[in-house]
Image (cartoon, rainbow, N blue to C red; front, side, top):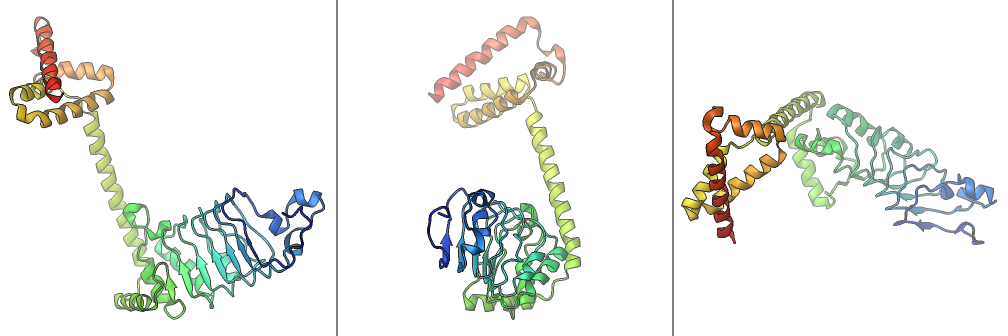
Length: 320
C-alpha cells in the first residue's frame, strides 16, 4: 500500500486486522525497508489518521508518534507489555485485550485524554496492594469512564491461579464517581447497583488482603500436594494375583456383577500398564497371598493361570 503512489495524507481510519503482521513500523515511520526505497511513511504519510485497528495479528510491540490518533485497537496480538504512549497525547480509546501483557501500568498516565481503556484477558498478576498502586495510575486519567480489567491473572480465584477476585469491588469503591462502566457492567442501572453493593461491603484493607491471599495460596497448594500424592499413590499400586483372580471369578459366578467386574479389570489393566515391569513381577509374586512368596507353588502356577484365562474368555464372551 505504501509503495503505491496513493495520497494517504487525508486518511482518517485504517484497519489492518486479521493478518499476520508482526509490527506496524510502516505506520510508526520506522521501517528500514521502506526507508531504503525512499518511501514516505509514518506521520508524514498518515497526517490525519484518527483510528488505527490492527486486531488479530502477531504484533509484539508498538511505538509511534501520532498526535492525531484518537483510537488504537491492538486486541488479540502478542504484546508482552504496554506500548509506549508518549507519542499518542490525544488518544481517547485504547483496546489492548487478549494479549500477553505483564508489568506496570505506569505508561498509561501519559494518556490524559483517555475515555475508554480495555486491558482485559492479559497476564497482569498483582497482589492486592500492587493492584491498588496500579489503580492509582488509572485514577489519574480524569476523563476515563469505561474500564475493562476482567480475566487477568489477578482477577481469578486462588484455585484458578489468581489472588484478588475482589478487584471489582475495590475499583468501584475508589472510582465510583469517575466510571460509568466496569468490565461487563455497562448498563447504568446495573452499574449503580454494583456501586451500591460495593459501598455496603466497606473499604477493603489491601494489606490484610495480601495476608489473606498468602493463606489462600498456601491452602490451595497443600490441597494440590495432597491430591497429587494420593493420585500418585493410586497410580503406583499394582494389583495382586489374588485380586485379579477374584475379580474375574466374581464376574463368572454372578452375571449381574459384570459391569463392576469390567470396571475392576479396566482399573487393574491401567495400573499394570503404568507399572515398571520389574516391580510388577516382584509385586505380583510377593503380594500374592499376605506377602508370602510360597503361596503359589510352581506346580500350581500353570493350572491357576489356565483357570484365569478361561474365566477371562467367559467374561469377554458375555460382553460380546
